[in-house]
Amino acid sequence: QVQLVESGGGLVQPGGSLRLSCAASGFTFSSYAMKWYRQAPGKERELVADITSGGSSTNYADSVKGRFTISRDNAKNTVYLQMNNLEPEDTAVYSCNAVRFRNGRRIDYWGQGTQVTVSS
Image (cartoon, rainbow, N blue to C red; front, side):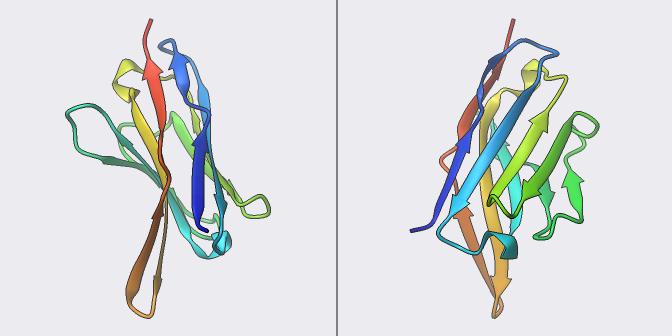
């Protein structure tokens, strides 16, 4: 059974930090690129960061560059999102996504999400 389970969300003051984790099971984690998305109330889902299957390349949304860091540990089947200098605008539900292409077909798995609230 495929599972992606996010953890690490919560309430933090502006300027604070959180580290999100996404633990994967039921599929070959090291074969999948991993992405973190977020969705705030009334807004469209936004791609925050992604990392290649081997971890050699990362990309970030302009809004989080220099503040967020995506990483992965393929031995632990886990992807992380370190979030520093958090701003109220970062408040959203954060979800992880595993994606690969196989025989021309896109395969996606999603977690349930974890709430991040940045407020004083």
